[in-house]
Image 1 (cartoon, rainbow, N blue to C red):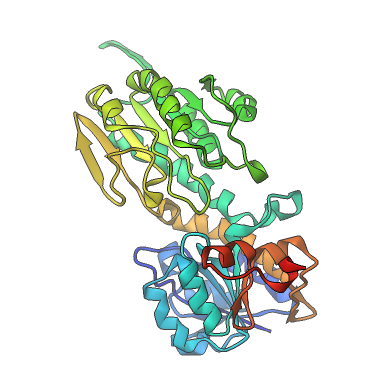
Image 2 (spheres, helix red, strand yellow):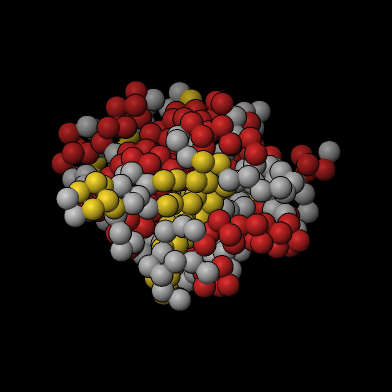
Amino acid sequence: MIVGVARETYPGEQRVAVVPATLPTLTKAGIEVVLESGAGDAAGFRDSDYVAKGAKVVTTRDEVFRADVMLQVRSAGANPTVGEADLARTRPGQVFIGMCEPLSEPQAVAQWAAAGATVFALELLPRITRAQSMDVLSSMATIAGYEAVLMAAQALPKIFPMLMTAAGTITPAKVFIVGAGVAGLQAIATARRLGAVVSAYDVRPAVKEQVQSLGAKFVEMKLEAAEGAGGYARAMDEDFYRRQRQMMAEVVAQQDVVITTAAIPGQKAPVLITAEMVAGMKPGAVIVDLAAERGGNCELTEAGTTVERDGVKILGPVNLPSEAARDASQMYARNLATFLTLLVKEGRVNVNLEDEIIRDTLVARDGNVVHPRVRQLLALDPPPAAQS
C-alpha cells in the first residue's frame, strides 16, 4: 500500500504529516511512503532524511496523489480554500487522514465526500485511553500552550521571574490562565518555569488538583460546573457567561498576563474578557487569546494580529503549533502513524466500523458524509445505521 505526503498548502503552515523517525513503523506495517519534494523543509526535515529511512521522493504533486492514502496536517475543512485545488486530483475511494475541521466547515467535508474520498478527521477521536497515543488535539495544544507563554513574555514590558539585585528587587509577573485543558496546563507549567506567579481558572472544578500540582493557585468562582462529554467544557447559556465575567473582572485587573484557552468544539469561543475588563487592567498588561481562530475569548481580539487598547496588548495568534514546526510535526506524525497502523491490516485499509476509534473519526465514504454530527450540521437525514 502506498501512502502519499504532499506539501501543505494552507498559508503559513510549516508542519508535515510524516517525519523520518516514523517511517520504520510504517514500513513494518507494509506501507510505502511517497513524499513530494520539499514537504518537510519548513519543519527542518530534508528530502535526504526521508530517503535514508526508505521513503521515495517525487517532484510533482500529481505523482504524490496517486497514493492509496494521503496523510495531511490540514485536510478538507482545515484547508477549505487553497485545498480545493486538490479535489481534481482525488480518486473515488482514495483515503485522506488529517485534521479536517468537520464541525466548523461541514460544507468543505461534503465537497470531499462528493469527490468520492474516504475522509478521517482526527479531531473526532474519542476521549478513551486507547486513543491517547493518537490524540492530535492534545499534542498540538501542548505546543500552543508553551508558545503562548513565550509570546506573552516577549510582549510584556517586564520579566517573569523575581530578581534580587544590587539595583533592587524585581517582583515576579502575575500570570492568569483561563482554561486548564492541555494548552492551559502547559501554559501554567511554562510560566512557572519562567518564574511567574501563576493562577488559573476553569469551569470544571475537577481540574483543581491538576492546576495545584503544577504550582499554580486555582481561582474558584461559585458557578455551576460546565464539564461535558469526554472531559471537554460544554457550552453554557449567556447568563452563565455574564456571571462568570463579573466574577473574573476583579481577578483579571490584578494580572500582568492573561492567557485564555477556552474553546467549545465546533462552536464560537465564549467571550470571557470584555472591553470593560481590559480597561481595568494594568498599563502594559498582555492578553494572549488562544481562541482567536474561533472568534476569541476577549471581546477585542483580532485573529492574526495584535491590538492595543487602554495600554493593554491583546495578541490573537493563529496556528501556533506551526511556529514550533519541527517538534509539532514529530508529535503529530507519531499520532498519525499510530492511527494508520490501527487502520491498515495486512497492507490494506480496513474500515472496521466496530472499532470506536475508526467509526468516530470517519466522516466521508462512498460519496456520502457519514458522520452523524456532520450530517446534522448539513441538515441531512441520519445515516441508516443511526435510524435503526
